[in-house]
Length: 229
Image 1 (cartoon, rainbow, N blue to C red):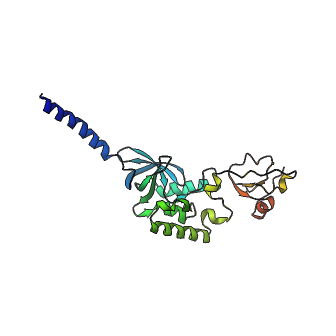
Image 2: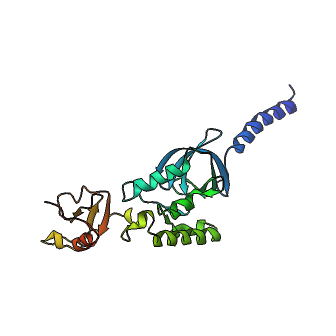
């Protein structure tokens, strides 16, 4: 084989595999679309998608923030998203990736926006802190959907005392203890069984799925019960 023919042959061997790889790698600096099935739902705003060419993507639902899995209404939000998916073929319209390398996408079954359905059903907040990632029309639609869910007391809005997940992730604020912990103006945790645990109480530190209140009085007024001991 002559030198020019050898170079041409090597060029083709390199170029063809490269072209095949490029066909399956989304351009993360711009919009891209994925299609496949959801194999795992982590919580109400995070899923794992397996595309038709067997590529896995971790997807963060764009424009919403759902309760954490260990937060009040977290399990309900996760289950609601699972019910929406119903093992259907999903289209994910994505705008890029976040710092955790999750694709930022809107999920669709046909023309139904599943991200928006989470907000409409009171299973997630409109994530206004990152609304700039959305189109202007989506910002308006999602904001209106949250207002309507609040007014109808849908899902997590059954209580006006629900803690937003971006605040929950910061953890409870530390306060100075007093001699009478039950009167402390610090964080009182209402467990899912409606028991109010004050700081210094036996089960306060162990209660991880809770709604926070500033005082025992506020917790009791919201329908909570005092601990037996």
